[in-house]
Length: 362
Ligand SMILES: Nc1nc2c(c(=O)[nH]1)N[C@H]1C(S)=C(S)[C@@H](COP(=O)(O)O)O[C@H]1N2
Ligand SMILES: [Mo]
Image (tube, rainbow, N blue to C red; front, top):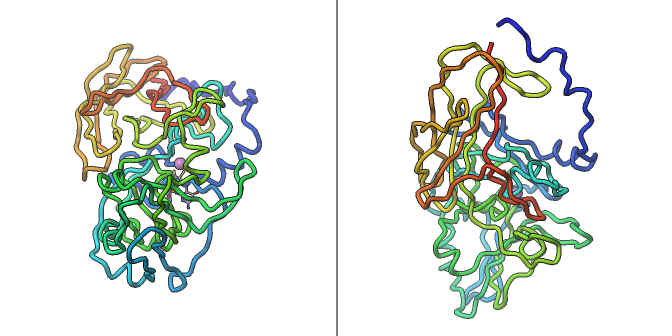
């Protein structure tokens, strides 16, 4: 390598406008390391984290799951009884609905994700449906509320973290109760000893530290269901619910990084770019394109492990000396594709704008 484009590092003199509270959230809620997009399964410690309140530590032998409310035969199960159910393991790609929030203008104040609230894990557990059937939901049920053990305040409202699914949603989603992640017991920060996984939906639906399932004869009005996770154009907009993941792709940043800016340095010549693409609700990826020297080129898809796992892609590039802005764009089998310019909603949800990667070629 010759000329060093990272010296002097002008960016270090800038003082961006992120607040101390955002920084605190960013330190608690770590994200994926983009270089590990080369792994089919995200190494467990680098799967992103999003915890609203404090992580509850629950001893496995103290945990139980209660099905209550409008069931004909409500019951409770210990963790051991749940783990004795038929066991399945599935790779599922999970993404936080707030991923990309920091790229919106104006930036909504919350966890300031850029691109990294993403991960694919092999989740071990049991399908939820048979356990629901066994409790016999009444015909009058309108919502099932899934309640976590964690408790705290948001906008002054004290609540357990909770989310709901309607009977129709539950019927079409492959919801799992899980106790294992990548062949090991679930870690406290990922919801131990028991969490929900709602494949194909943004992460907020996958309730951690699950202790209660309530069958309701009215709609669930918990804070995390009605106050947030809605696409609102402005504060008075009732909005629409955030649910399935929007199509997206990411590139493993090529070459070598600058420590501070993460800008990339690489040698001229052939470079194989690679990354991952995914969409929601099990919809496959139809194509990925990469922006090379101002033109979109088709990338090769390298397949996915399962219906709800991301797809690999790669593309060759003849890198010529100078500065380049690379980008990648996925399109799913329903024709949904990624925008070139970020949209806006007050919560900063589902920003699937194409990723830009600045590279310097020697
Ligand atoms: N009980 C509970 N469940 C929760 C959350 C939470 O704060 N409490 N965060 C949700 C959100 S917003 C996301 S994106 C995922 C993150 O799961 P992970 O931290 O295991 O990646 O968990 C979801 N389930
Ligand atoms: Mo999230």
